[in-house]
Amino acid sequence: MPDETTPLLSSIDDTIESCMTGPRMTHLLPSLLVALAWVFDAQQTFISVFTDVEPTWHCKNPDDTACASSSSPCNLDRSTWAWDAPIGSSVVSEWDLKCSAPALISLPASAYFMGCLIGGLLLSTLADSILGRKRLLVISCLAMSMTGISAVLSPNIWIYASMRFVCGCARATVGTCAMVLCTEIVGKKWREVVSVFSFVCFTLGFLSLPLIAYLCRMMSWRIIYLWTSVPSLCYAILVHFFVQESPRWLLVRGRKDEAIQTLKRLAALSGNMVTSSFSKLQYFDEPTCETGALSTMKMLWDRKWATRRLTAIMTVGFGVGLVYYGMPLNVGNLGSNLYLSVTFNALAEFPSSLVTFFLVGKINRRSSLLALTTISGIFSLCCIVNNEIIPAKVQMVLEVVSFFSTCTCFNIIMIYSIELFPTCVRNSALALIRQALVLGGVLAPMLVVKGREKKFWSFGVFGLLICCCGLFTVCLPETRGRSICDTMEEEEYKEADNQ
Image 1 (tube, rainbow, N blue to C red):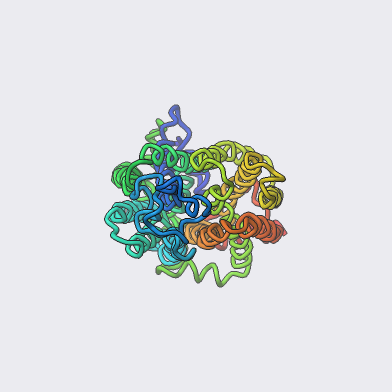
Image 2: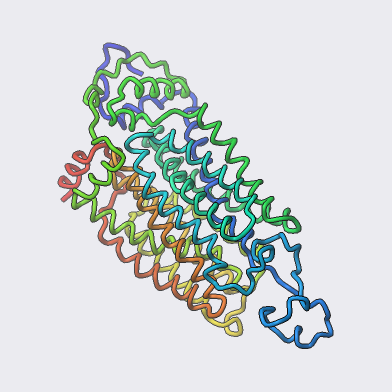
């Protein structure tokens, strides 16, 4: 680090980068801790795959021909059949939802995604304006954990769906706050690394669910919620005590002294002894963005370039989200083993994270998204073919390839969005984009239930929509290799310079 007489760096990117140059790599520890939030995010997102599963059933009397010839127990007397698993292993069997309307069966999952949508719209701006990234992350994790624990006490489907809705509202900002915070407390050199680690954590959370569910398969579905919600509660406490606020956010909010103290702590973690006064950062002595919970939305709306970018990337996100959240819920419609299918889907995210790491550094974002959405759509459409023509095992492979392509799209969209918008609106923009992804998740459970009758309504609609939405990537600028901006004016200047 330079001493008092050395010219100082005025760029936030350069200043953070200089603080991270040291003999140790321990400065990455706070970012890696923040990225772990994606583990609990994934668990709450896909937990309904197992808690809301439709169990298999059997006839109590094997000689009952009427029962044995029936493909559904809905037209049979309740005393003639029973569930294969304990009645409390699923909400469907515990509350006798087997013969209910598809809308009621999919209500908890849809309510969760609707909560994510509404929570993201109402709460995401708080990370850019009032609370900051760290505080909102802690509050969101605490609320998500508590509502997950409260779901254990649900006496009926309506209370359970309400708890899932509230959990979705709380969870809405977890992933975005974690992604933004972990990338803003490291230099440009490590930004892609910690981003990919976030995706790996999401995969680990997803992959942990089949294991937890399998161990609890003969127990109540409520146990699964306890195994996922209690660790999340402990994690929120760790973040509160061991993670610093984003120095970028502190600087654009005019809180220079706090930002400098944060930079010094981060520098100390890497083995640097900071002696500079950071005098060149006086430009940020006053807030560079408007204050107020909705000010960031206004800033995005008032600039045509920002609105254009946001609309295009959100449209792409909707198509990707429909497949990303819908495929794991839809694997039961393939007729293969549920635990094995979900595990394969979760494992597909590991190579997806590795591919993302290499794609983001070497290949244009736009062409990558366009190619991957097309591949995902084509393979999803292939899954609508009857099992007699394409065996179930082959269809499972096709489904995994489609999901793998979608996972890679999801990862690229998250990194791409960070580069498309400046610091003062980044969390709000990323949250809106994530809500577009979640909006696909709201529609997905209903299509999955409908797809049990005819696979076109799930795999077919998935494939068509992701292909069509992916075309909107041509409306976006290329950001590969660019440094991220901190103010709207800086982004406008860079866009004008590239034209």
